[in-house]
Every structure is written in structure tokens, then in C-alpha cells.
Length: 437
Image (cartoon, helix red, strand yellow):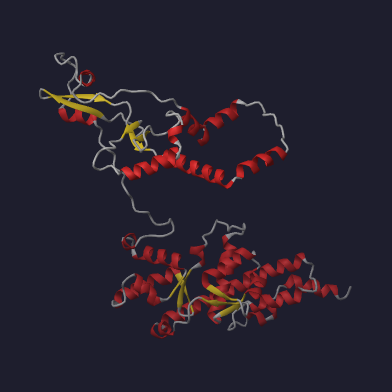
């Protein structure tokens, strides 16, 4: 829509309007046809407004007119917003480049160059339906349609004229005396159907991941479940840290209750508490590498047992004994230790808690007995596994070295492995029979 400007008003800057008209139509606008000029006068005398849809869904909106204490509503089919278009700036920029090009004399040179250029003739491929639809959706095609859209001459009718009064009558209901018997809605229901309430978007706070629990939900659990949940998520923790989580630093009875439950779900390593392997790796399940969790439990317990004797272990020595896949062994070590690349060793995550060991010597002694019993079970399991492997290898040259490694699994205080009667008899008989042959 072209909207005329009041060029003689007090708010119009005439010098600026003349400058814009000069930049758009050029200095020789008077010698050109008036239809070729963008502005009809020598000043900027019009403004172009372009329409865009203000909203896509207008079914909830209507225009209301009050007459004789009656409200007349007319539904809307579309809502347009008019915004000024600054296309005249593009025309001024284009004319400025053309005038600079004419003044530099590049026109003649360019004509000579165009004559010397070779012309390649190409035949356009037939346009398919798919390519035509893609072309119609492009921005360039839509912009060209807007530019090629023909202008429609309209006449302005001011308010109070005969034409405007005629159009205004269309906003009034022509059947005011008609009574509708089926209209039985209450005023509030009618208004809610006429203008439905806006659905408010409820913003919900993001929840915690599935493996985590909020502090409020944790406090609602029984003490055993609380200790178990914290140990599963922490893996390794000192007794002081656990008391801080459960807010039991100043209560002796609460600390003893936590310690009693803690011994059911964790084991003591270097004065710190580590979640039990059977809780972290339940039975009747497998790891990502396809290894049964029972074997993972044995391997993890063996690593923890080594940490009860020393604060660091060598991964190669552990792998030679437990014989687990590399990923499973790495996951076990990452859960309770950290790697020192300079020495290729793995150190326990926390330093030795000597305060706890001095304060609760009975708990420390009980945990040592548990580890002593567990080490004997691990030694027996790994020894049987080694014997089976020796049988499959037919007592090869490496049997002695592997067997010595199996012997080293046992705890230091135990002397059972030094007794010849505890050695596997079948393998010994085979080696004895092999000599006389």
C-alpha cells in the first residue's frame, strides 16, 4: 500500500526529502517520463507499506461494536500488519553504482570485453514436477512474485462518508428481534466458548538422573536403604564423610547405628568403606563384555584385598591372576583407585583413615577376619581355575610359573599353600608318570 506523506506539514524535513528523491530518481528525473520515476514530485512524497500476517489462527478474535446497549460481534478471517518498506534505498544504491560506473568510463571497455568473450550455448533441461515444486518454494521465486504483483488502484473514503457508513452497517446484526430458544448457556459458559482461556505452559524443574536421588527423598528412606543408596553412588567413602551426609557428626548413637548398618553393605579398606561387590554386581547378570557377575565379584574382591595390604597395585599383575577382559578390569580399578601413569600403578582413591582405625579397633579386627576368610576362598577359586587351565594346556612349560602366581594370591598369614597335600593331585600324578616314559 502506498501512503501519501504530508510534505507541507511542520514535521516534514523538506531538504531530507529532496535528497532521498534525488538519490532514488537521479539528477535528470525531470527529463524522464513521470511513470519511470519512483516519486511524482521532487521530494519523497509517499511511503510504501507491506502487509504480513500478524497471526495464523484468528478464530478466537472478533470485532465488537456497541449500539443501543447491545454488543455486536463480527468474527475475523485474517489479521494483517502493515510495516514500512525501504525498497527505495535499494533503488538509490543501484543508481549510485550505475552513475559511478558511467563516470569512470568502464562502459566502453566492458562492451569491448563482451565482444571478445566466447559464448557457450546451453539447452535447459525439461522442468519436472518435482523441480517445479521445489522452485516455487524458494525465496527467490516468492520475492519475484511479490515484485511482479500488479498494483490495484483504490479510493480512500474518510470516516463519516456515505461509503464508510454503508460498510459500517455490516458490523451490526440484522436480526436483532430474532429469539433463539436453543441458546441455553450461562453467561460465563458462553464467554468461555467465545473466548477460550489461554492454556498456560507449566514450567517444571528438571528432574535428577535415574541413578541419583534428592536429599529430601533420601531422608525419607529407612537407615539401611539410605546407607546402601549412598554407598552405591559413592563407591568409596570415609566414615566422616558418611556421617556428614547423614548429619550424624554430633550424635554418638546415630554414628554407631550407621556403623552397624555400614558393615552390612560395605567392607573396610585402608580405614575407608567400599561398597560390597555382590551389591554392585548382583548375581544372575552379566557385564558388557558378557562375563558373569560372579567372576566380576571375585576379581573386584581380589583387587580390594590387595588394597588392604598396600595402597597401590600393578594392573598387569592383577590381570594375570583374575583373567578378566580389559574393559571389566578397568571399570573395577576406576571405581576404587586412580592411575599413576608415571609408574603404571593404580593407587587407592582415599588416603588411609588412621583416626577411624584407632577409634574402632574392634570393627577393624572383625573386617580383617572377613578379609582373611575371603582371601582363602579367592585363593581356592583361582587355584581351581588354574588347574583346569593346566589340564587343557597339557602341563606346558608355563605351568610352574602360572601355578606360582596362583599361590601368591593367598593371604600372607596363611600357610596352607606350603603344605604339599593341598596341591592338586591329578596334575602331580601326570607329571610323575611322564618321567619314566
